[in-house]
Figure 1 (tube, rainbow, N blue to C red):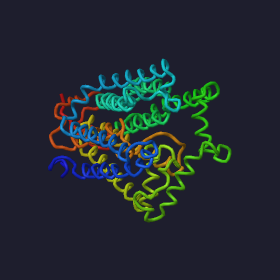
Figure 2: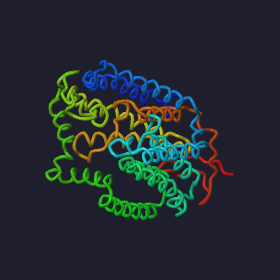
Figure 3: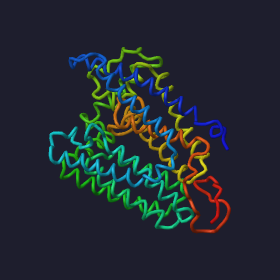
Figure 4: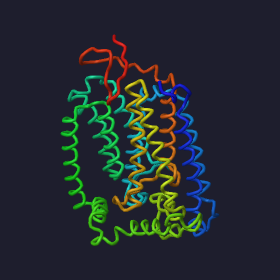
Length: 400
């Protein structure tokens, strides 16, 4: 048993997360106060809104850390279909009231982004399916057919929104879980090959007949060939200028220029550039270092977890946070096409902040000794030995 499990929750993961949350409060304030003043509001207007979401994030984290993670396996279907229903409701609202769409997308309802809830439900559904499969994960049914059903459902909803960056992250999360569970790679490769081909054809068709599809294609074109898409690279150029202005030590807290309307949505989509301008290379490197600690601890929790479900869930939650992080940083540094993915715990508060807090809380619970005992993972299929290999880790198994 690891030292982390013997002494309680993973304290390094908790402290690293709290450090990002506190730092995020300062970053949001310095990034939004000029905008609030220009809008005729008090400088603290957006800060107060963000702190409200931070409180919700901390409550979600505490809840996730206190509740035994076995409960999430039991509620996986309910959470998944609730997220799907809310996501469809947001899409339907956009159809009925087109003026409510934001930048051509129907992603919000009742002040929340339901696709984040759907992502959590999706993670729980896939983790449940692959952990229940046991040694049968090598079959085409468990490696391909069963996981494909939730993926097709979320793909249809995310395309209707549209939210292609979120769809790519769903695929990445699913691939990581299948890999860790030991799914047969030839089935996974064949399935995602067909899925990717259909997706490319669908995007090409949609870009030819739909304004929303053209918008997505234009963003990809701006990334691949910026000289011919000047309008599509303006945000990237300004983001890179902000990072360059920061130099090694930064321009100083409150002295950045991008937040004065120079870089739209600086406190959300490219907050990493605000950090780079005001805190310099040292600031961005420190942020990368803290995130590296979080990701490493997430994988350590997975390695030390005694249940298949816990291992798969830990990996998926960590990968989800990592993909949000890497997409945001790549957009801010010009290494990926522009998209609206926040930087966990540092971007202006929203549904992602609260869900990210819940993810950390669940990881903390999995890291505790004695949790997950209610999970029944009876062995199925294959050679009846005393150990089942799950993603490179050996798990003791009670034979029935």
